[in-house]
Image 1 (cartoon, rainbow, N blue to C red):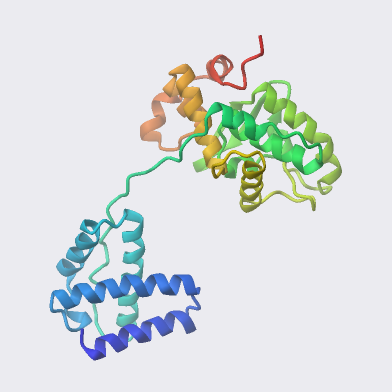
Image 2 (image 1 turned 120 degrees about the horizontal axis):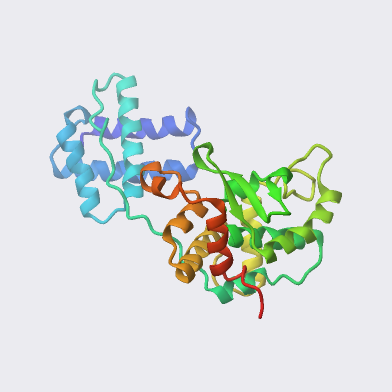
Length: 300
C-alpha cells in the first residue's frame, strides 16, 4: 500500500479512538483485521483503497476462510473493513464500499459439552441453608429440570409458576409461550426458596428469583452464581446456564428417544423445523418427562 493509504488507515484508527470512543480491545481487533487486509492488498499489488473492487473483496474473504479463520472471526473482519470503507467514503477518499453485501461463511455450530448425570447431581447438592444458597439451588434445579433459556428463567414471575400442576409458563423466543413440567426435586427447591424470597423481594417485584437487594436478577448475576457453585462443588469444569439446558436435553433424549418431545420442551423458535412438534399436547410431554428425566424419577 502507498504511504497515503497507510496514513488513511492510521487516521481511521484514530477516529475509532477519539470520535467513536471504542474500547481498546475493539480497537486492537480492528487494527489486526485491517492489517490483514493491508497484507492481502500488498500481495495483490493494490496500492490505493479505491482500487479494491467487489471481486477483490470476495477474494480477501475467501483467503481468510482458507487460512482457517472461523465464520465468527471472518464476520468480525467484515465489520472492520466495512467500517473502514464507510469512513473512506465519508472522507471522500472513495465512492464505493466493495464489502457491502458480502457475507461470512457460516461456522459449524458447536454445542457445549453436557455434564454427566453424576456431575449435575453433585452441582445441585448444595447443603448450605443461607437464603442465596437456597435461591441458587432452586435456579440450578429449575434449569436442569425444565431446560429453560437464561432469559426465560430470569423473566419468570410468580404467577407463571403453577405449584399445583408442577409447571412453569415461559415466554420464549418470538414471544411464543409454552408450558414446561417442573420435576419434584426442583419444585421442592423452589418451595424452600419462596419463604426467603418473601423477605428479600421488593414490595412491587414480581420476579420469582431476586437479588439480595430485592430486584430481578440479571443474566450476568445468574451466570456468576452458577459458575461459583460449579467451582465450590468441585465439578472441575466450567458451568454456565446453557450447559445445564444442554444437559437437560441430552439426558432426556438419551433416556427417552423422544426427539419431538424434547424439542417441544426446549421451545425451539424456527417454525420450519419445529412445526411438526406443535401438535404435541402438554399431557404427552409431562408423561415423557416423568418417565425419562433423571430427577423426575422417584426413588424406589
